[in-house]
Length: 144
Image 1 (cartoon, rainbow, N blue to C red):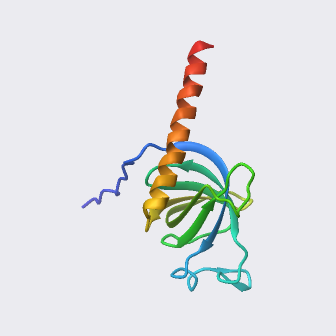
Image 2 (cartoon, one colour; image 1 turned 135 degrees about the vertical axis):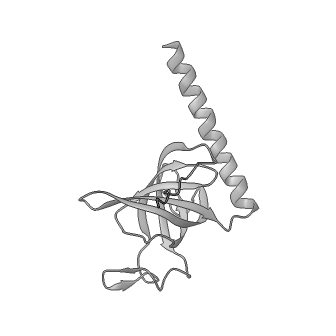
Image 3 (cartoon, one colour; image 1 turned 90 degrees about the horizontal axis):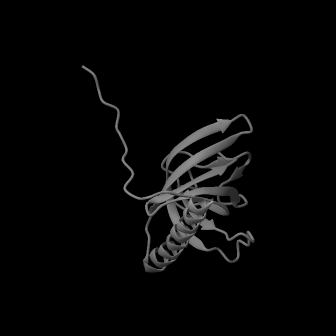
């Protein structure tokens, strides 16, 4: 008997974007996550780079291993990288993780969880800006 591997179909358009982000394990995850001699609650925020964004979640790179199922409090910063003024704040759950090379660096896919009206509004604004930028870029490419 052969078992079919689960296939995942994306339900949302993915937008490529590179922005700095900061994250911390949520309270539910702190017991499961430990960083070299410190508990996750005492650790400095984890820094990473957002690489894609969709209505359903995010993809990002970071230097810390985060276990599948971990919940994180995520703060996406603007180009100025000021964590005091994030452009998007959300709770996410790690869905997949892959080591990309020997640095170490990890490519992590995470789904949005526990969203509220403020988050939905901020996400929609950011997605609209990305769509507009992609449209402007494709118009420029066609003319060239």
